[in-house]
Image 1 (cartoon, rainbow, N blue to C red):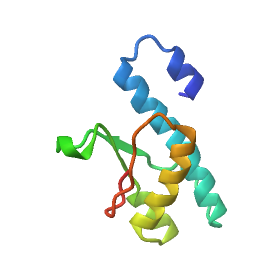
Image 2: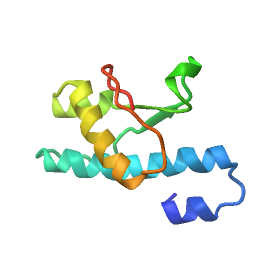
Image 3: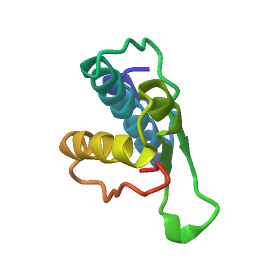
Image 4: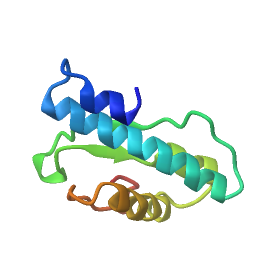
Length: 102
């Protein structure tokens, strides 16, 4: 589902629309970043979950799969993906963690 369809979809709740918007933007950002690093990826695994601990925020985006493809530290990849996502989704409060989550 592309971003335009997500926003028009009345069957999704507000939270689901936010989650899908993040997933859609993250998908695009990850593909671009991986390609810039000289690798190919057509369908990255974008895992967005609700953290078990409330202090970890509303959603968690796991960057471990992408870090593995790039053979880089999860934190380094999370920081780069975070910077790019922040440009696309400036209204969302986000941070990159040392364990490779955003």
